[in-house]
Length: 385
Length: 177
Image (cartoon, rainbow over the protein chains, first blue to last red):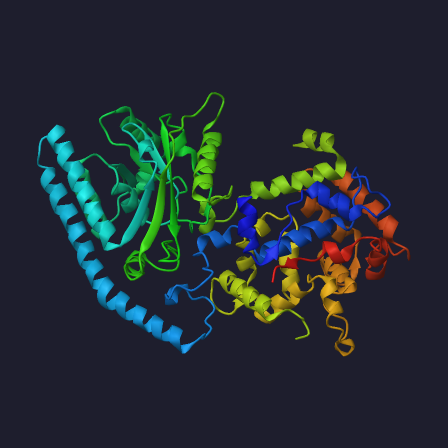
């Protein structure tokens, strides 16, 4: 149902009939309408049409660009088809620019610098304290305070739903990923242990300071590839009940907040309780999606701070555990479906890695296998593969 | 103009063209098409992509892009624009059939040879069917279609075999605007 709603906004109407149904339909009027061991030259029509449809409008590539708005929100960046509508609108827009860049942006920048600066300094100071309840208490307070300042810096208006389901120690919190801001939004309402790669520069400085106050899980670039190492560190962390819940974004990359793409199963293999969280931004006030191929982090933050506001809703979903007979991938899909349902997002099976990489050949082979089965019957094909 | 596509459809297609054009040079290459996952997994994906590129060319501009897509406009739209002087529209039944014919005709010599048919069949079935079986399917298909005995399928023979198929509907995509 959600799928239909999104496709109505597309360019073309796509029918979701299966290969079998379509071929039967095409061959309806021909001499051999039965689909056994016969090929018809018209079979190509199905693949041809599907191919052309995907050229005009496909569900994957558009996940990696910002969503189009139905009506303009006075930000140039959201203006896709520039049409001069009226002078009055231009004046309004000009006024908007003045307000946003002249007033909002400097204010927000100041807050952001304050927030980050305080985070680095205070966590470093707390690092000198001996491990214990006092340290954890102070660390929590410092983290929350600094993140809340950052939230103000972005003028993020966040509505939290179902806070009774907030992640607890020893659990893993998973959420859909739209931008780096997701972290700030979640961390300003609760304390999490972050997972990620150590960066250089400012980011690295922040990471190194944070880990002095409470245990986060940072990986060196070389360690990231080692799946066993990653899994071990994660599971060691969740076994220790005194440590904070881990925050992970299983999609692995930023998606444009209209859909949820494939969850990587690593976090779901660990066997602890999973706390799903759905984050949905309202694009009318500012487009939160970070298109990393289009602009870098600094540019992105600048755009964030010069939008009207970041308005979003966060839903804490009830915790989920992997059930008997369910493997990690199925569990991941179950969690993904729950998040998609709550956030009103399209649930896609495609891998977010397609943003940068090619699709695997196995999918094409599946299509070929399906067609072969129709052509010569299931028996023959099964024995061959 | 001859393409008979509405202004809003052109705008949307241009927007789509632009989003596919990663190199931002006003033209699409084969790699740009390959980046669409649903097309990359389509067994006839390469043939479809090839249809956009004229002989020997590696780039297609927006005009060419639209021209190829125009083949897939539904036929009913023509009733509104009865312009007899402009010749046969791109989305006529004959031109749609010709588009499909060219999917099979790999060397563009206006004949589908047994070899070409085999190659396209192989694309559609992958590794799941043996050479012998595929060969016999190809032979049977040619036998049924070939009327002049040259062991190839010409365009008129192709048209005859598919005369009962609802080409207009199966080779059309419905635009929403």
